[in-house]
Image (cartoon, rainbow, N blue to C red; front, side, top):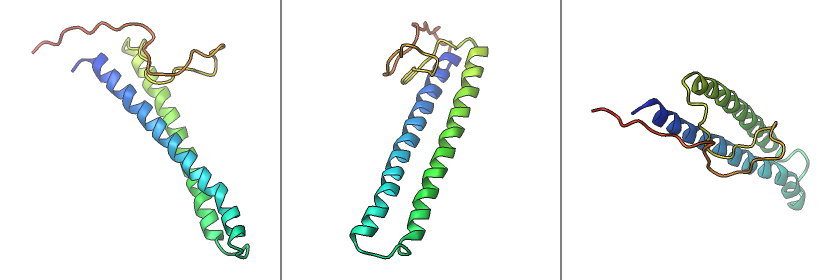
Length: 120
């Protein structure tokens, strides 16, 4: 497997990991947001469920930290790809904060990549 193919595979895995953490963050946040209304709707005291509130909040915090680690990983891998001449690779939504106007989402590659045939 050549470097380009490896880079593409890693980019896809990274995007999948980022999307999975974002999805988990949404789910945990919704849970945390619904807990107070559920407690109130069940007419339970404010003390009841406090540990569940703290657990859900802790999960959200942990997911935010996990997301930050993936963002750092993304930056490191982008730098490695650039050093290896693979900086034309972009998988997943490619919008960056400096993109004005936004490029748009979807799985894309900035420019076509020609793969050299692998020798056996």
